[in-house]
Image (tube, rainbow, N blue to C red; front, side, top):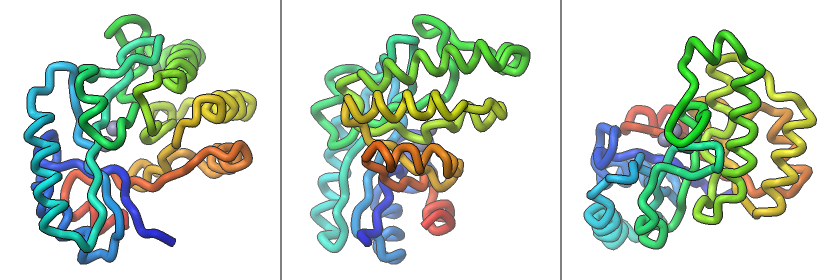
Length: 214
Ligand SMILES: [Zn+2]
Ligand SMILES: [Zn+2]
């Protein structure tokens, strides 16, 4: 089995360690492939420096395969993500993720609203993820059901199947996120039955987490 971690953050966004420090630790852990996936916003202005830095570290440590990526949050029900379109060709992987549940263009449910009406929250989330799966710029769905888990919203089995069928059609990869422990066993099983490609990510924001989740 190739030991890989496809979800690492560095101090280019909210991580604590540099790209080089994270790479050095990954080598010590015996990982063979890592991908940096720092958080971006449409206005992020450091992408070129970030990609350049990854290139430098890649040259310095040929023992490990190092890829570049970005993690961008879903901003509307159409499955658009918070990234400038110029970013997409600059990195190897684009991760789409829910950090909130959108209701419209850059409008989101508050925590109170989600807790008050979980059914409505699930409906908004479901609509947005189906469209996220159709977003051609997105390669990987990061921590797929994290936001539902946080609010203890149950995803019915038939919706899991719908998601897997749609992911199959658009050839999306799903992340098994070690930090947030999502998706659950049932969804992983359904994704496997639909031949969805699964990858592992630690979502590490520092060296300590990188060690803890690998
Ligand atoms: Zn995330
Ligand atoms: Zn992340």
